[in-house]
Image (cartoon, rainbow, N blue to C red; front, side, top):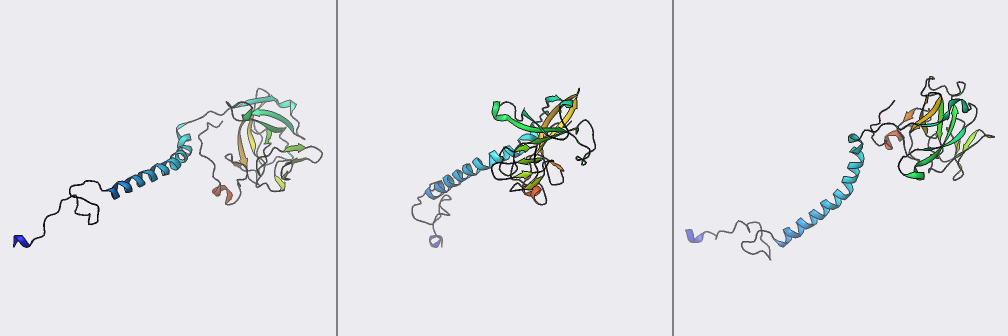
Length: 223
C-alpha cells in the first residue's frame, strides 16, 4: 500500500508545477522578477507621493511669525486714489520676492465691509492679475485696475469688472503702528470681499471654487 502513495515533494516546490523550477530552490526566476517589478513600482510611487505628502503636512511642524514691513506714514496715503509701493512679499530670495502693492487709506463711503480699527485703516491691493498673474496698473483717470496681458479689468475696490480674471485682486493684511502703515501677508477675497487664505492666480474663491482650489495648510501666528 505504501508503494502506491505519490512521492513526497519538497516544501519549496509544492506550488511550482511549471517548467524551469528545480528541486530545493527557494526563489524562482518568476518570483524574483515579480519582486523586482513591484519594488520599482513602489519606488516610483514613493517618488510622487512623498514630496506631495511633505508639501501638505510640512507646515504642521513649522510655525512662522507674520512678517510686517513699514510702507511709510499713514498720513501720506490718500483715500481717493492709490499709491504704488514696492515691498518684499517673500523674504530671502532677493528681487524675485519683491512685488508692487497699491495702497490707500480706508474710505468709509466706499469700504463698508469691515468696521474700522487699527488693522483695516488701509486698503492694500496686490498688482498680480487673478487670471495668469500679470502685473496690473491702476489708471487714475478711469479709476480702474487694468491688466495689459489679456484685458482684465477691476474696479476701484479691486473687484473684477471685465475680462478673464476669476476673482477680485488679492489684498494684504495691514495695521497702523506708531503712525506708520505696515503690511503683513497676502490673502485672497471672493466677490463679497470675504477673506480666504492666499490662492494662486486662476483659482476661484466663489461657490464650488473654494473647494476645488483649497489653500495650502499653514500655521501662521495671526495678530
